[in-house]
Length: 116
Image (tube, helix red, strand yellow):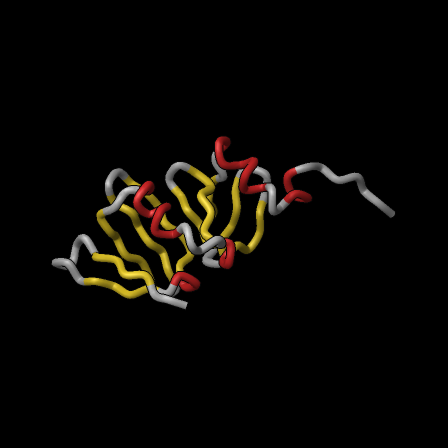
């Protein structure tokens, strides 16, 4: 798998190489994005629209909130309005993104009858 390259906003322009499968999430805050990955975190100067385009080939990245893109590879569990990543961070699932996200998790999205 190819690495993604990101220019860190605080370090005088260091360019970081991250493998997509090692990224937990992207969190937007204005024109900056925090990338949380296995090795720590990184802040870049970019917006969510540019990031969404960059991540398009990687189908396991899903936008679940206006401020969050998560990696399905790192989901620990899913609840009705939020999910927990393997790093124990709770991420809200936005109303606008809920239906498309739960298409894959159909059983979690709709109540199921108890079967004996």
